[in-house]
Length: 269
Image 1 (tube, rainbow, N blue to C red):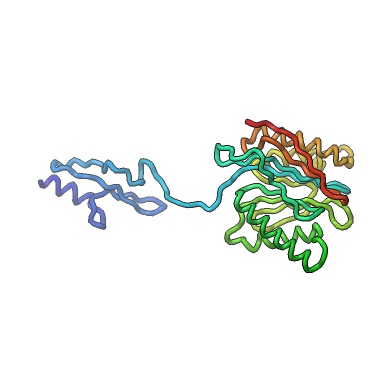
Image 2: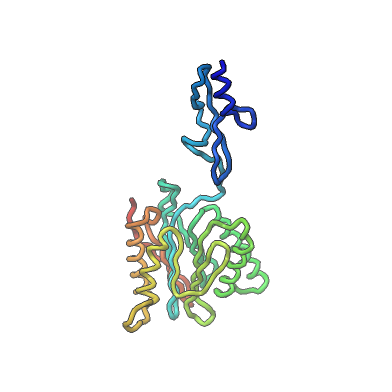
């Protein structure tokens, strides 16, 4: 009996439980144990998530549904493209889900990320577009849409849309305009941009071929047809390495005359 009390007194925690104290930089914890009458210490067979299999019960309002978007501006056009695969983890939820959304006759939004947040953002922007058109009797210009999108994202900065956006269109002068955004509305006008799961695969390619960065040869203006072919090759490349990019790529060419849409098939596995 004395052996039992000696062992228990050495192990007893502050709250009255018989336990082994653990000290760490993340805070103190205890491991419940059983002490037999002969003084032998045995660990509690129930795993309390302290050592053997740590676990955390939590809820996340976000889910990354994959997808890749790409936007390129030209002298008198803009090209925006996105794949049509909608994923959740290793599951493909849809093979024909558009990530491009027409905001005006000369401006298109491309969004990757959480599908529900993307849908909500589109709804908010569509309402703003209708209000503007009702008040001014005209569509909003592409630079104004770019600023408004940045404002809307910034308004949600404390609980941001899990949406990674690119905006493409033509401005009042007919020149291509592409805007790149982060999740809380910081944006810039840039010749090329990409977002989503395949971003890191596409950016180096278009920086070299389109933006002509770190090259010594003469830069040539590419026609919209040439850019569309480059976009197809870029998405084929991304689809080889990114499981969230595939099935098809939807490509929109925006000019002062309107928007033309084409679809190119990708890998379906």
